[in-house]
Image (tube, rainbow, N blue to C red):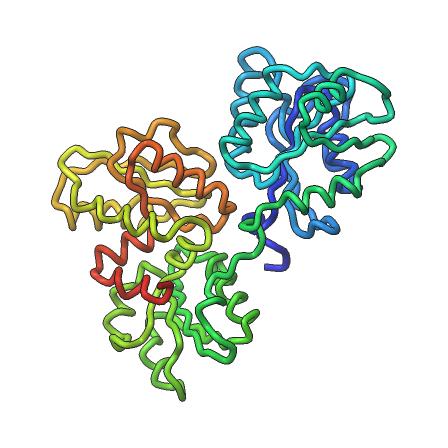
Length: 396
């Protein structure tokens, strides 16, 4: 991986009515013609994502959205997609211009931002135009705003600095395992190579955990599960931690001495991207499953489906064998996540390595609000294999 993954970038959502200069603002912030600019209202249709390195912000993801006042059947669909962006936005920017009449569209955005505890700032674009009802409205209601001119490149540096001030603490690099190991500690990574692995490289969670270990000035030893026994025998000292792919828990469990600390990449990401306690509490819902119950398998990315796919084949099979119940499974991928969760008795989330933490936390909060149990791939597998207490112990 030669660049910061999208999931670890500060997500900055640009919102506002049509033709307020959202795309022009993005071009001014990036210093590039990133977004299409036109005097024709409604130029931006679907959300446009642009990964950038912007000083002083650093690695970030700018999201240009369709106008929140888009009209017609197609316009309503565009607005729905714009609202989905809120689930992964770390900092919100509401763009208005001096002649904009602030009404229910902006007020709804503000209400949503505040309900989600999402930091935001109004940007008064085209500040070269004097007067205007929007400036008066913002001043009257004491709403924070910053004046810029995307056309004249005025106020852009001040806006970048304001974004940094607003950025929530969780967006930046949260340790994966660096806080539970010390310098010079030895960490063994068990990385199976099977048909689901990308050709010629490791998967993203493995790469990120390895980098986190190296940043801690610790030592990473990588092996396959088939060579784990020999790898352990060759070490001069006992590893501080063993991290494995959850799918080979049983193999690693049987090889590893009981007193060797063990966890998995999926469980590392359960804490990194979500809420480990909520996921651990949620897995107990397995014991309450009954015939006919529905279970949602939630994958945060899209990938080529393998014959032994973890979400579509292995987890359903393990659950059916464990519970001996007639269970029904539904799989959603990518940005899809049902609004109504009440029909599900359990949600099983992937590790979320391809999305940011806010997206996973949105799903957790949605499940909690509707009183639906939610857990994580790795935690579910550890529970079914009888080693849950052992694999979460390193984080206690």
